[in-house]
Image 1 (tube, rainbow, N blue to C red):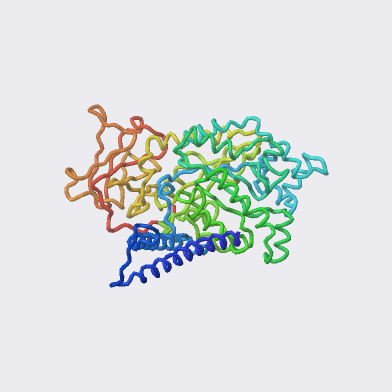
Image 2: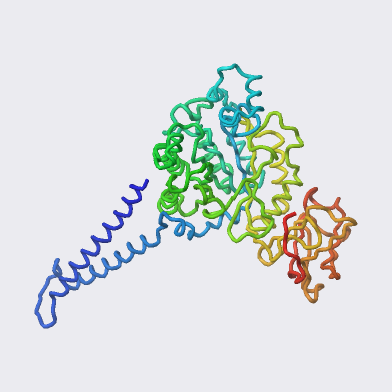
Length: 521
């Protein structure tokens, strides 16, 4: 990869050298046409006027080439971090994560099943295998049962669309090394060679783009693999060799981008190796400069030891990261519907799943503080999105159908959450302030401590609720300034569309000056 970067720079350099040489040749011809000398031409190759025009054209071309080189992102974090965030990502707000792989076959405990069983000797995993499988059973034996016989990518796309998500990220390869596409570098350990016998990545990419073209398709990719011999060899060499990177990691990343054109490249699994071992900056420079998605792609921050929460289009920092306060850099809360795992667990009780209220609380607190939310679901080994997860996603989509204008393309407001009433989070868009109220107020009366109306509220302040249409037989919204802030009288709950989290739409309101700094709730 370093040779490729050097080749590109050499190519740019040679173009400029040729242009400058041609520029000098033209100048020398121009200098020969001295004042006072008679030089008769017939418009041929020695025509000084033509040569002057050519000189100007070559000068312009040389300047353009120089500008192109200067505009390219260089393989260092200072340059890469200067790239503006493509606007679609911040506007999208809501994404769906799909953790799917050979670990979906045992469906026990974690996506880290293989490592916890074989490497860490975790007793729960050891006992699970001892009680259910023959003594010589290997992790690779699970792959043949990764059948995906019920996998319907068009139906998955319809579920994703129904969820209200604006992007999806599929695990193309987790730390186990099994690829969900026919990778050229993973012979015998990919979804085409064993198990489903199909290109799971390509099928979902095509389905999403045909069924729900407004949803951006993205891919997760693990840099390392727990038990790959080349990685273990590099690790034994203190990462001063990079056989694994050059043979496996980088070819896979280039293959994924060139074949599937992901809008998100979600990297993970940097282990204890620095970004220079992974050649991360070289790959990202290519991704931002030359790849087929160079203008639209976004990347996260897991590209080597020390890069998390410091470098990338958006920061994830850690799993389930939700700081509860406004952040200076775009960030993402990658979290799970199952409170305890990133995969489908056959033995998970219903109480281990987030309720729709808990999910909306995560959504509200995330977007109010400038983040996106990436909600994980774990498909089954046979290709289904479990019913309880599908239900949560459809509930989320229904809520977004009513209240989406407070979410999509919104920006953080002056205050993120209310200083007086817990469970109220703010966003804004095009002059409207939205208050996402997670709990219906006692006595139908809500007091907001962070909002004040205009000086003449009857004329300039307007408050309504998304999903509620007042008429002559129903209550119009009443509000007034009170000592503690702004008092709002809600209608009867039976007259409102929605059972969870209600959104006030407010125009002509201003941030209260006595607001207490936002804190995580």
